[in-house]
Every structure is written in C-alpha cells, then in structure tokens.
Length: 215
Ligand code: DX5
Ligand code: ZN
Image (cartoon, rainbow, N blue to C red; front, side, top):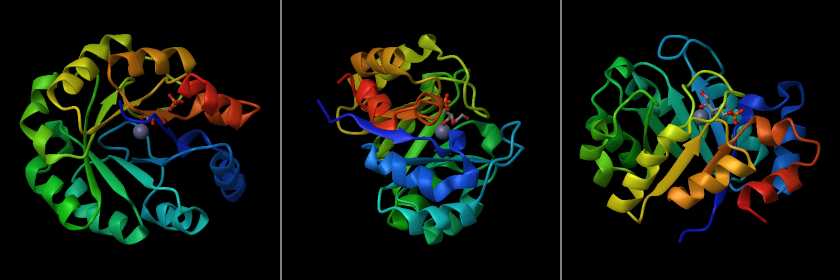
C-alpha cells in the first residue's frame, strides 16, 4: 500500500497571496502542488499558464503536478518542463487533439513523470493501452473546468480497475475530494488526493490535510 499523497490544487487558492498560500499549505503537510491549466477550449474555463508554474517553482521545492486541460498539450509540454514541472498529465480524449503515445514519450524524455487522465464521461477502455507508458493515472471525479463541484462516486470502478491492473503507478483522484470521498477513493485503490476547496477554503490547512489522510 503506497503512502497517501495530498496534492492541494491551487485553483482554489487566494491568488492575491500566492506566496503565503504556498508557504501555508507546505507547512501544513502538502506533498505535491497540483496546477490546473485550462485553455478555454478543452474545458469551458481559462486558468493560468507556464509563467505561474515558473513563479511557483521559485516558491516551493514540492513537486509541481501539472494537469493540462488543454488542446494540443504536446505543443506546450516544453514550456511547462522549462517552467519547472515535475509531472505533466494530459487528457486522453480525442478533443485534446494530440497523439497520446507520442506526448507521453515526449513528457518522459523531458525528464518529467508522465500522467494520463480521463473525464467522468470517458470509458476506462480508452486509457488501458497506455497503462504501461505512464507514471500517474488521474481519474477525474468531477467534469474538469471548475473547483467546488460534487464528487462523482460512479468513477470509483475506474480507480478499482486501474489498481487491479497496475499496483505500481500513482492513482490520483481529482475533484470534490474531502475526508469522506478521500476515504472512499483510498479504499478503491487511489493513493494521490487532489483537493482544492476542502483545503484552501478551510480555516486550518494542517487539520484539513490530516483529515484527508484519515488521521
Ligand atoms: C477541476 C480541477 C480540479 C479542481 C479540484 O477541473 O481539475 O483539480 O480544481 O477542486 P475541488 O477540490 O475544489 O473540487
Ligand atoms: Zn486538476
């Protein structure tokens, strides 16, 4: 059983105090920083780009876990590598408009960990051919684009199936993660928890992170 990794999503952080937020969440026991990149095409929202990831690189030594919810991610991989990403996760859906195998190889060849993710509406079969080419499988437990959405428990069979096929990779869940849904996700085989609202909208970040770990 892998250690549970908590990856706060800065999408829910107070961007007017980004340095403080990163220091606070790092002191509170965060393991990774999850960076939600949105282009307004693949998802119906726009967030931030490589420049903010470069700023974050200067604020923390924690691994930067970059989640690309964008079209043509292959075109942007070099910029996020240069900005200091430690892992880069791309979407498997055809709407992301890239050659998935080639992009995963491009990410690994750049020295970053390679992740693949799928939306709640996307069947698990779509990612099976790539399970041996990735370091991280990110199971979306909300439809991507916004924080603060309700958890989709119907995604748990995907977590369970992935864990039954591969007990080495990191299986990450993302969206609506709180102590209750974290417990359910871990029971099904997840070991990486992305949480935005349940951490950054709490009064005590350390308590929120402990509760996600089930402590
Ligand atoms: C949604 C993002 C998630 C989201 C999680 O598109 O991928 O990482 O920020 O936010 P919460 O934890 O608030 O659901
Ligand atoms: Zn995310």
